[in-house]
Image (cartoon, rainbow, N blue to C red; front, side):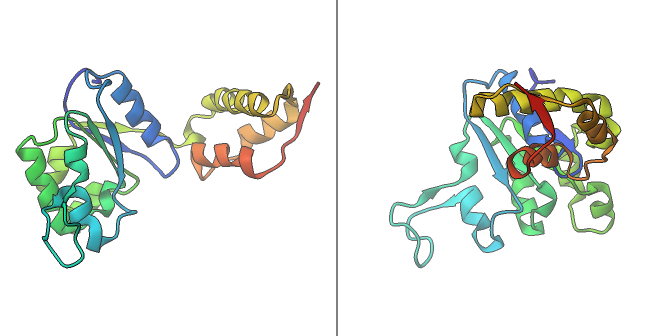
Length: 206
């Protein structure tokens, strides 16, 4: 999959690690020496989205830069574009993106969403033709509550980061691990990671 230039659609709840998977695909692709550009479609103001994604020529509108501006798609030339929260893209921008994909202006796209795009297609809030163009290689990332076996590995990973950052040698008590295995983690891996930076935790260590 990583070796191909097919469009990948990552599906999963907020916080499951879709951007991490996108970066893994990128790092194992033939484009790993080129740019990886992550674009959060839900974080760009609709009034600025056109110029941010596609750029503009100098003097295109009042207040525009005299030199013009490269769009993010042009900046990512020959690299990989990660379109996060693709379900938040307005319909008019969906038309522009579809054209870009059809003309193969972008060779490698990884898109992600926590929304049900098929339902959005039925409700006519997401273009069917764009959905089919993006849904070439769909990958569903299960929520953390469905993969409890992965929790100890995440705990070890974040504990190692914590110990390195603060020069400590802490370890988890058994009851703390059992409690975290029993918790459903509605915010998924992101919540687990933020738990480290925002809360004290039950740990025993030397």
